[in-house]
Length: 417
Length: 170
Image (cartoon, rainbow over all chains, first blue to last red; front, side):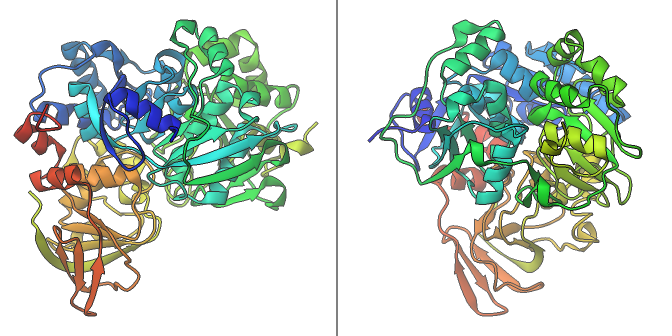
């Protein structure tokens, strides 16, 4: 019997062939925390009596969720993280560097790796063929110290893709459509793996969006094969030597197969207050929006800002609608400046936030007022997510976000020239 | 250390309880002050929660309990509030593992027949919940032995302190 990508990676990293349902103790290639889960992780690390980090160069402490910190307690958490980093020799990614998952994609994740982060969106690295998964603080503390942890080998739901996206339809629409179809618990405990002729039509930045939201269907990992598009991305990141081809075996066993024709997709919107409450943008009616937020580990890349800038060039945000843009990393911000995208966006009325998680999780930089509605390119719309349980969050693609910023109501981006 | 048998009253939490319901992101600045953080548990979802839990009460969810973020603070504040165990029809993966790692038992069973205030007895080793208010007995199945060992040790960090590693043969 052939192996899925998840079985293949967990077999390689545990040193023995494993199959869905087995428990594997596997070596870990990258362990990281961020500033809202990190302090607990580092305290648990010390409580456990660990005296050192297994691989300091591949143990990263990111400050992105409160960047820069809006409160003294969070500033003090940052102090603690920097001190821990200095004491144990780990890498510190400080305020302003960007969102952990974007930097993991740019710098660290390699096909075939196991990468664990104390953040649920650590699944993002699956776009590079890495077994990226989110864990809690205790588990990441163990991974940091021992260089390994235990994993239940997941069953796999395969998503079989055909065709290519049509105009103004983006990979965000693919993943929202998938989650709407299978539900927020449709892949709980499972791996999502992507296959089919549509895979080659999608770049790594496209794939990152989909892997990022795998956890919103409950999945443990969202794995793409490592192929020519992966090599192309790693080359652009200046680390082509990290490339290796990786794919599931043709006779691998899947619990379920979901087929999606990319050319049949249309712009989708996830409505409050659950991610699987998905409707077509064209069918939403008149939803007035006070804030549009473009950024995050889901959709804060240059490719996203390019789409938005192309749609907004020479135009302006609607009266009564503010547009917040947070590039996902320092590298994204620099490239967006060089390409003139930031100038275009600022001229169109956007407010540029520093690289980081920004408004996504309700800590700072764009907390909603009572009764306000935000259309966001992020990955979660739970009640209270953007800092106010009396606020409403809709999730959509950067193209839909741009169209909505221009009109002030949620708008199908295909309506904009 | 988690007790093998426990008894408490049911507190109903419902379907799709997210980690933002359990402890909203806007309290991120309190995460290094767990006693204060725990006073905000379920603030937007179950009014008065932090003050009304009696030690050993059982939190009863429906579908997809604990979906969302990896914040281990979620099971931490539930445990600090006095809850002795969680029952749900299904549990999000990271939350499930985090709860066990904090020594907080989570059992998966059909919770539809449980009402607020029901008198529940949980037998961990047998994987059985007895609802003394209705007379129902619910089967929860068994968890992998490594997980039940971690739970028995009171969580992952106590387990590591006890064993020195993840597996005895290490």
